[in-house]
Amino acid sequence: MGNRLRMSVAVGLLTSVLTIFAAEGTELTAYVGATIVDPGANVVIPNGVIVVSGNTIQAVGEARSVKIPKTAHVVRLRGKWIVPGYIDVHTHISREGDAKNNVHFFNDNTVWRRDATVPPELPTFLARHLRSGTTTILDIGGPEWTLSVRNATVGEKPWPRVLGAGPIIGTTRPLFGVEGDREGYKAISTPDEGRAAVRLAAALKPDMMKFYLVPAEQTGKPFGEFLPIFEASFDEAHKLGMRTTAHALRLHIAKMAIEAGVDTLAHGVMDAPVDDAFIQTMRQRGVVVAPTLMVLVGPPRTLAGTLRFTDEEKAWGDPDAIADLLEASERAKNTPPNPRRTLMKSDQLEVALRNTKALSDAGVALAVGTDAGLLGVLHGPSILHEFQLMNRAGMTAREVLTAATLGGAKFLGREADLGGLSPGKLADMVVLNADPLADIRNASRMHMVVVGGRMWKPEEILPVSRKLEPR
Ligand SMILES: [Zn+2]
Image (cartoon, rainbow, N blue to C red; front, side):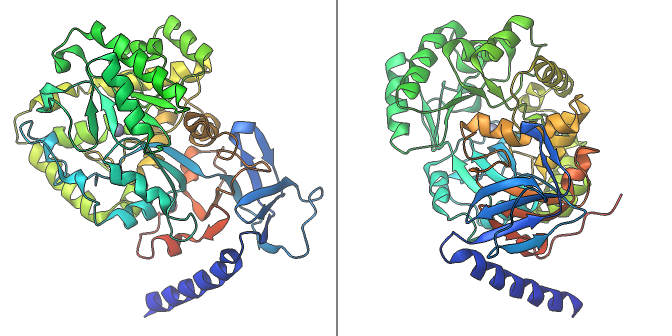
């Protein structure tokens, strides 16, 4: 009864907020009294004001220096903190993150084809991202349909802004039983094939082009043969004004990707310590790296039978996926290891954590990615788990939040309109109940999420989710 009452109040709120924002996109809203934290700009303003016009930030400053327009709808936020909305640059919306739809992790002979269709849970996955404070996600490679989700109007549904890479271009992968093309994957084996694949993919107007670079023993070819292929591919992408990212988890492969001219790395290096020459090259070329540590947690722990979830994951992750994964993890305790599992050694996370810290200390631009959708990596709250891992690597709360905001914008080539709280940027914000610079776990204490100028209370986004227990 009580719950139903609260639900109808929430629906009432929803309608009134919609009338404020849905008309012309030029309505004014003033967020007043919160501490404004823009980590990428190194700005902290106590008792601040943010004026938003439609979907864009118009003014930011101290209360006494910003004039609040008379017509503005005023949202009082004394005692709260405002940070830019989080950006997850590594998600796969074609996948569920559970075990039953990720059988290829358990059985190498199974080529998984279900991502060819839209998962029925997609609207809830997207809501789970927004509930976790994520206002922009990049689907970093999948079937063509993933690009169509971008047409959804930001603010209409409780979803983040969705960007997409579309089909992946890469080397052949005989190890996984994939010799040539498949849904969402274009295999290339000459420079000309690389250029042709890029032109074909560019016609879909993706927000990023994803390239898959796998080790020599998985391609059946001497690895050196791939450098000219990727040089040609990245060159073609750049000529067409496209930004590029590489799946390259090992040092020698990441080096090749950088040498071939890639703009970003979709993963950190997890097999060896990064060396100074590599770090310097990345800094000079402005390469942005998403360490994507969660993919070194979800899959290996599920396969090793040691999976555990954070409070945020338990509160806002898909309960069916969680139950399914815990059961799979239990089952895995009594199952002999398979080749996939031996590819994932437990020390990879430790290596990746040390590399993350080394890149951060050297001033390489970092972004935040999760690989949400892969085995054991839940859509939504995985980003908050990733924050905690980056913090464990030795990054301060401010450095983690910079990666999650400005770093994500840099990764996407969208510094002009994303990743910060300055005039001209899109009004994507997370309002928090506690100071995120004091403790990164406070980045999970959402009071409200704003995407494209549209305010969402947590209970409007996920009406039946659990509350995070106070610490
Ligand atoms: Zn991925």
